[in-house]
Image 1 (cartoon, rainbow, N blue to C red):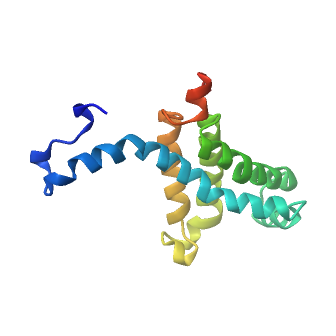
Image 2 (image 1 turned 90 degrees about the horizontal axis):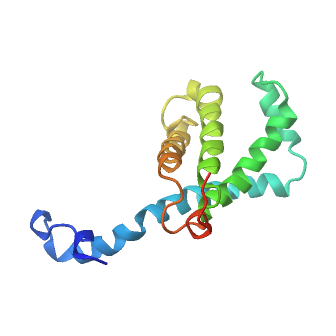
Length: 154
């Protein structure tokens, strides 16, 4: 770690924390990317373990969307595989895009009528995922990703 990665201690309220902030900053993006995928992953695993997503397809059809079973499988794929890929940084931009698309649908079709707060089934939590995936899409996998180690990105 170089001294350039350390924040200027003169600008900090607690100058003694400069070294801690410098160490944490090195891993912050990887932690954010990993957390974004890892928090979504259990949603997909539950759907994957349930087998054929007929319940999800019924919910999708009830909202007037076509190809309900195909979309239900897309949700299972996105919430399990794309979320896992995002967590480890493999096909990172594609994974972020798929999750962003799903969150766009969830926000506009399912949660918008409920308002903002997640406690009332509003858009708050899906919007957070949406915003994180926008940032991850533009940044890519980063230094601590499989994309980086493989030397290729989408």
